[in-house]
Length: 198
Image (cartoon, rainbow, N blue to C red):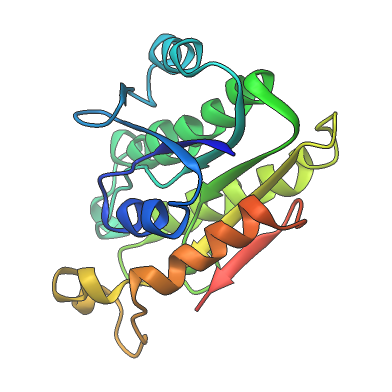
């Protein structure tokens, strides 16, 4: 398979690349990779897909969110997650569907806070739930046997030191375990599903 991996340089992205290494992987990111892309810029997204050409799978492991107290949060703060992780990944799906071969798949990334909110995480919960809703509905309209899923990983062991204060009582998982869900999405038959790795 020819797979476009957006966010390949991140912790999850590196693990996904390793887990799917038997395939042809094109990497993309804002500052590194085979291709450059700013997921908040539709022209950049379109250019990336034009350069990538026909694909068998699109995997997104990227997107920024805003974390902070609700009492101090502004609409501009909230738009960080909406314009980056939510609309950025949706743009990858909307544009990418036209570059997918028959039977191709799209895999987006949400996170455990979609179902288990944390303190200071209102933006993250809203964005992740919206991504999962989008995939569930989009799956009903994709054609030519194309599929779309979302992977929802727990907080990662590799990132635990920085995120532990936000996740009291959560059990961190290794990135390699999260990566298996991306393999299942790409190589399996799931469609419109949120694949949780908690």
